[in-house]
Length: 374
Image (tube, rainbow, N blue to C red; front, top):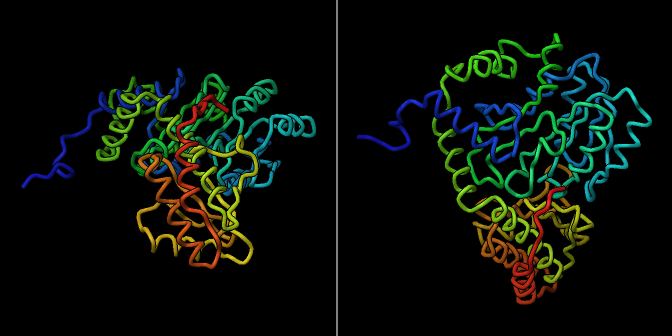
């Protein structure tokens, strides 16, 4: 008995390369694009370990948990790390980056998360990129959560290593990811004696065995299901138009934020300023005396299908995350999330206005929302 998910024809090098080309077009980049056969942590870690070493001084921007992870990797590589941590309810500014360069002119590597889905903020990469380019440092960007929800433009922003994943706003699989690599980044890796070689983490192995060979022979058997799913979600974005997909995410974020404020019950946007809020997820602060994880559990009892989660770690007590990305960037998912939260807050003895919240969300969704890049 044949099965469409099991009895697949081999995925050849030409098809693999064609999918890479489509990802490159989505990013608007002329840089090399490598599709990695694993979740985005693979190229995120691989790129840092390839480009950073004992001679590196890295400015590591922390606006959420992934920024903290990057700092750990950089230190493990032997790099000197200057952490620039900002409160998770805001975004870093280009001026803060400029000040860090002034205080530490030896910085030659900058690591930044575009959108932190875990904390709900997004950073102004275009402005930051201009400062990094002016200083001449290598620029590493985690755009896993932002791709598909807001513009990601490595070439225009001067990003040397841009990592994306398919599992959030792109609406694709979690088991495949990609990284765009500039010529400067390749040169930095080649000069780094500690760059991984003969390793699953090695970008240089892929360059030598795949790119330098004209993309004629794959280094190993590709993950067919994930590759085909990635191709399908890129096709879907192309068919709808990237601007349309990004506008849908921006509308979901605006409607969720406005609806949560109108709901009442003591809920507040976790990210203070709307301009700093990521279109991929909206984070909310629960009222005093309420535990976020318990409130989410009640909401999921009311509607198990809503895209709600409590914050991770210590944030589980105070933060709720509405994950309105991919298939959940819809008016229906926003309405269902607000209604479930309203039920949970009401059961906690708090006064809410579910009808007003749903009306506000609907009105906000219908308002034009810009999708210009940050």
